[in-house]
Structures are given as C-alpha cells and as structure tokens.
Length: 340
Image: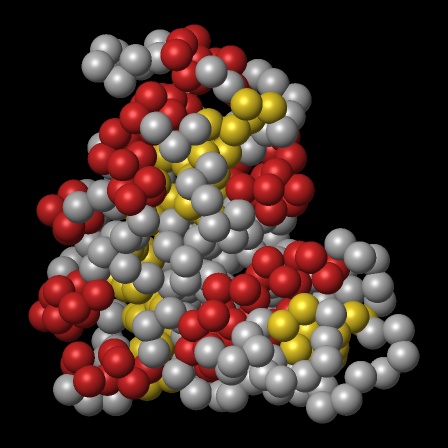
C-alpha cells in the first residue's frame, strides 16, 4: 500500500478536490492518515462517488455515499456482493438519521441505550428519503446505525450524510479488523483506506428488526439478553430459512479459503489449529476463555491461519452464550457449504 501526504489538504480550508481525484485514479490502495486532513480527504472521496474503507468499533467498513446509486453499485462490484444482501447506512448523529426512517418507541429505547455503538436497527424507510434503493436491495426498510469509533464519527461528520458501509472485504471472505486486511482483500477496488488501527469489538453489529415486533436478525457485540432487558421482553429470533431482510444473513459468509471444522476437541494431522482456552494450538482466540478477547481476535486469527495455505482450519468449541453466540454465528457461516 502507498501512503499519501495530506498536506495537499488543509482542515481549515475547503478540501482540494484534486486530492480525491488523485486517490481515485491510482492502481493500488492508498492509506489516508487518521488526522483532520485525512478525514477531510476521505469525505471528499465519498462526495466524489468514491469508495473509502474506514474503521468502526466492529470491523472496517467499505463506505460510499448512500444517496449515490452509482457509488453504492461500486460497493457491490468491489465486494462481489449478492444484490439481495442489503447494506447498513452509517450516520454521525441521530437527527440526520431520523430524516430517513420511520422512528418508533422501541427504536428510541434501543438508541438511547446503545448508540453510538455496535447496534444496527432495521426500520421503515421514509418515502422522501433520497437513500438509494440499492442500499436496501429492493426492500421498503433500511438498516441504520451510529458507530462509536471516533474516526468513523469524524468522517461521517465531515461528510454530512449517510454512508453505506458493509464490511470492507470481498463478499463471503473473512471480515477485516485491520487496514492491512482491507488492502489484502480489496486491493485497488477501494479508492482509499483510512488506517485507524485495530477494531476493538471484532465482530459486526447486532441487527434488530423493528418493522413489527422486535426481531433479532443477527447476533453481535450487544447480546440478546442485553436487548431483552432494555426492551423489557424477549426478542423473536430470525430463523435461517427465512428470507433475507438484513445484512450478514447468507449462510456461507465470513469464509476463509480453507475449509473450517468446528467444535474440534482434538486435532487431525495437517490441520491449522484455532484454539480457545487451555489447548495446544497454532493461534488462540483466548487462552483465558474471555469471549470479548475471542471476538476481537476472531477475524484476524482466521486471516493469519488462512494465509498459511492449509486446507483445513480446526476450531475449538466456543461457549454458546453471550458474545459466544455471535462468534459461533460467524464460525458456522465460515464452515457452511459455499454458495454460488
């Protein structure tokens, strides 16, 4: 990856649009520094219809102007993403977000408790919203969230609108938690990568549908138990056989090149070994059995093992509770038969 000197820009003056053009006409991904000038450059690229990878507290997102059909189409093209898998739109503030969705009492309860943070809400789209229909893949709802990562929030404030941003990787591959993961997966398909360091949560946001009764569409960094306490009642959980209504619901997803064998209590010859707890392994998600640590390490460790070129990655059992539910969800998709 190449770095770029953002002294071409100045945070106290209008952005030099030539900087955005410079990034968008290169053949390799460029790194944008995590500075005020870097944030301004990233926002200029977004306004120009470009793609910018940026960190959130969950994973790195591949961002485009959510109101620009062509820019959103570039996300699908860059990722090789199925057209029926919707995208999440990220906003800097709640007032701007509310202009695009039909707000509800339950949305207010969850937003007050968890935003900014790793929670996505699926709500009905306002008829007047200019957000591209490609974002919702033809549905009458959109998935929205307010990320907590300071860098993401700075870029969104500088941009001033909604940014559609799925994970910044080729569709079905391991999600990126570091800038280098983005470069390795997308290469020149992304116009710039803003390097904000490793992501802290390490798995994608929890998704809750609020079109009818609250529906847990995807487990994530906020647990089902937490959500139930906030709402005062349990959530319905989406069954995998149901139609796709939100991001991250394809069965074969987050997949390395190697085949994944789950719940391995012993190792077979030639396997790459991803452990949890006190086990002899190649990489350990958490020797102390800390699920938060395991979530933060999950995608990076899968990347590192997959890069070794083995045919099978064997994974220790992960407790199916709390954050372990989200980890097991990602692992089960990584191990599922490949689609397409």
